Figure 1: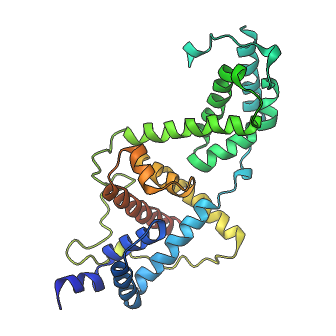
Figure 2 (figure 1 turned 90 degrees about the horizontal axis):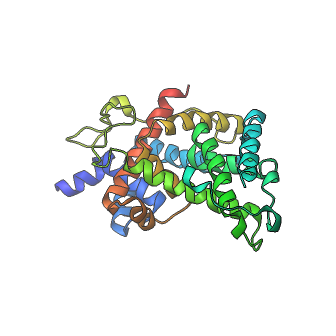
Figure 3 (figure 1 turned 180 degrees about the vertical axis):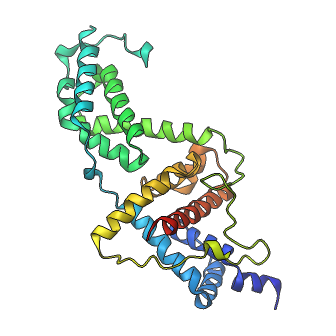
Amino acid sequence: MTSALRSIIYNCKQATFLIEKRIAGKITAAETLQLHIHLAGCSVCKIYQQQSILINRVFVGFENTDFKLDEAFKKTLTEKIEKEINKN
Amino acid sequence: MQNETDKDIAPKSLHSDPLSWVEKYADYLYGFAMSRLRDEDVAKDMVQDTFLAGLQRVDRFEGNSEEKTWLTAILKNKIADFYRKRSSNGLRDLKLTDAEGEQQDFFDTESGHWNEKYRPQAFGLEVDNPLMIKELGSILNECLAKLPGLWFSVFSMKHMDDLSSELICTELKLTAANFWVIMHRTKLNLRACLQKNWN
């Protein structure tokens, strides 16, 4: 087996790199094929890929509305704004 | 900040009422800042800075856009500055040490195989269970907080702001190769951190 092919089939570091590049950008047709071959035989990287996609989903699905400022901070903020306005 | 506060403000002819800002927009802006920063203290500072910067420019606010949109634009600029600043604090040489300081050898140097300690295992969670996803989300936020500033900036700009990698590289002065190394390392770190803390 050529070393190039071996690195395609067995190299999880390269495979996970390609997984990330595919998720967030583009990979070449050759890379797609390499990754396909790797994933066909590597259940660990398959788990990695699922979890990587899940992480993105959870990260992006962050609910803005879950976060509210506490009243004390808002009061301070209002006072600061009033003070700035009254300077003039 | 201090030297900016002495400029003239003419409240009478304004198209905006700063006294109502906190009540109307503080929670919204805070949520927006949190989504980009995932750090309560930094997000609070950003909201405050946004209002104060808004006050400095309120006389130039023409009322052509929504107040909310206008304030959000100020906040976005502040967040972009913050990303740039965090990215230039050390770690520029990309030694790619792990988030917690120790070198993590995810893979065998020779073979590129997963090293036993970092090998992905199923989380054993139901991805359709909103409560579980929420819990995973709060652990993820803790993991994000441990990332080097540059990594977090890259990851957040890519995924929250959906910016092109070219633009992020320009903004943060990265090469394309470094960008992808960071994206890869960031995900490896986050995944390992989740596995460690999720049970």
